[in-house]
Image 1 (tube, rainbow, N blue to C red):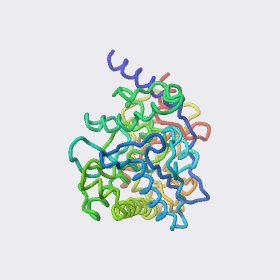
Image 2: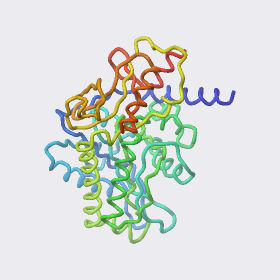
Image 3: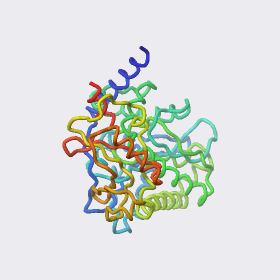
Image 4: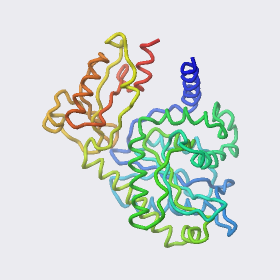
Length: 370
C-alpha cells in the first residue's frame, strides 16, 4: 500500500512539473555543437556574497564570458548565453533558452559560501539530494524563485523547502544523467589536476535550473567567496582566467570523447529491466536499443558496430544516434539489449517511439499497463 502511495506521489509531481516545463528537443544549430552558458543570479539577485563585498553574480558572469570567448574560437561550436550583463533572469527562462536553442550542453556557473573558511570546488548534476548538505546547497540556489513574478504559477507543485519536491525533478532528467556526470567529472578533474584546487567532488542535488533543461547539464560551484584566500582568487583576473580555461577545456574534452569514442557516452535506464509486460506486443509503439550517440557520422554497417546487424542512424542537429533492432515486442527488445551488452555495449538501453516520435520508456510501458 505504501509503495502504491509513493508511486502516486511521484506521478503527481512529474505531471505537475512536466505540464509546466515540457519542451521539445531536437538538437540543431546547422550541425554545430551548441553549449549554453548560464551565469548564476544577476540583477536584483546578487547570489552569495561575502563581507568583503564580493558578489557571486559578478564573478559568475566574468567566468561565463571568458569560457564563452574560448569556446567561440572553435568553428564547430555555437555558444548561447542566458545573460551577458548584470540582469535578473528567471530560472525557468534559463532552461527555456537552452531548450529553444536545442543545446547539446548546459553549464551553469556559481560560487559557494559558508559561515566557516570552507573551500574547494564541486560540480552538481540533477538528482535527489544524497545528504543534508547537498539539500541545503540546492535549497539556497532554488530560493531565488521567490524573487520572480508569478513564481507560484511558474513552479506549481514545487516547494524549495520540501525534500519531496526533488523526487520529480531528478526523474525528469534521468535520460541525461550519465552524460551530465561525465562532464561534471571532467570539470572537477581539470580543477584538481591542472589548478590544484581542493576537490569537493561530483554531487547530486535538486537544482531547479538543471531540471528545466532537456540535455546534459551541470552546475559548477567554482569556490567559496567567503573563504579569505579563495574569495580573493575567485575575484582575481588570474583566478577567473584559470577557472575559465579549465571549464572550457573540460567541455572540449567532453565533445572530443563524443566524437572519437562512439558509444562511450550513453546511459542505461534501470526502469527498463524492472518492469514486466504480460503481453509481448505494445500497440503503436516501437522499441530500439540505443548503443551510441556521437557527433561522428558512421555508416550503419555491422563492421562499425562490433558485428551487430540491423543498425539504424538518426541525426539530431550535430549529434548522431545509433540504434540496434526494431520491434514492437518488448520481450524481444529486452533480448536484443542483452545481445548488445554482450557485444561490449554495456550501457545500451531501450528507447521507445510512438507515431515516429521518441517517448519516455516509462510512458510507453505505463500506457500498456493501464
